[in-house]
Image (cartoon, rainbow over all chains, first blue to last red; front, side, top):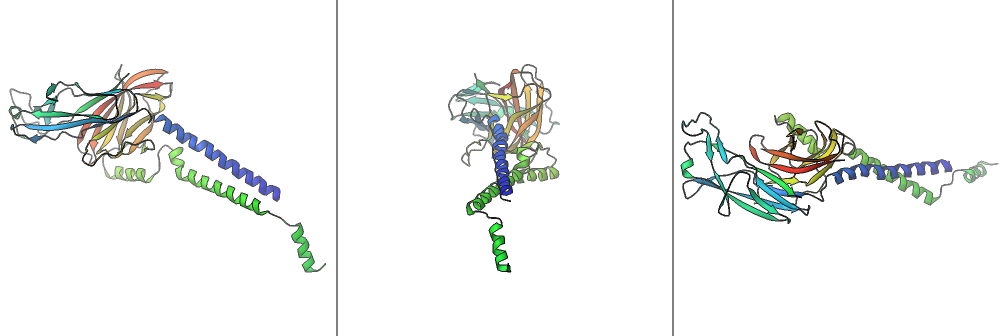
Amino acid sequence: MKKTLKHIAVLCAALTAVQVAVVPSSVRQKLIAYADDTSYIITIPSTINFTLDESGGYSAKANVSITENTTGKTIIVNLGNDSFQLKSDAPTIIDPEEAWGYINYTVSKDGTSLETNSEILNVTGKNDNTELLLSIPKDNIVFAGEYTGNLQFTISVLS
Amino acid sequence: MNKQEQDTGNQQTGIIIQKKQLVLFGVVFAAVLAGGVAVAFNWNNWFGKEPVTSAAEETAAEESKSPLELDPNAGNWDGKMPQETAPEDVGIKIPGYPSIDIQADSENVMLPLMNPEGNPCYFHFTVVLNDTQEVLYESKYVPPGQAITDVTLSRALPAGEYTATIQISTLSLDGETPLNGANVETVLVAK
């Protein structure tokens, strides 16, 4: 009986050791694969919210920032849009001379007008931000209605 | 031999367990029990395809109510989370990696596709090879605070480095409005 108890104790210890060694190892592999030691976080605006400004047109601000960078490399953010347009929700709005259902807006940074796919942020550090100004000139507003559009950003790492 | 003498004799030839042996056995038994309970609670997280957690159950419940197709492979994120920002900082956190190691010659790979907690939207991921514009993987919607880690690619990649773009499109939490998105360029290192 004494020998049996001893065998049981050894078996229990062995089972415990296996659990400690094997199970956390599989979890540890998953965590290592996430590569959270070499990553970055870019914060982009969630939406574009235009409001009436003093010129009679509409404008919006968009902040883009880097809030984490453990890569040690330069992170570059570009405007990934093919065009700067808002699209009407009502496709029945038709202008025979202009493309219907769209409103064009401009994007500028520090007073400088930007083109589509322009670089807006270039940073090696952990914290930096830039502010974009989006504007719809008064003359661009031809038809009333609801217009929506999104910004697409392209983020790359300089190797 | 009377009964008392007989009992004494039985006691002298019976099982003798020392106190320290009893304590040792108790400690070992408690350790095995604790380990077993830990494994039982985390079995699906460590070995199963889908984590069975309260968050996943809530997601499944939401999926049954809402037409929005959530990705069944999304689970709670165990890695490092972005630091919380001030309440007035409204935005979408986009995580990225300069390069990601994946298993070569295998369709089933580990690829971290995370939607940071606190984001005001679902993420939809599409992984595209830059050279050929081939779609390697496309997810369903991933809720904030969850991540897809186990991915089945459209084809296995031989060993090598592949420039790729993780296209992130977003959808508001009410499932109705697309929000701003991002294309995250990276290098898939198959080895």
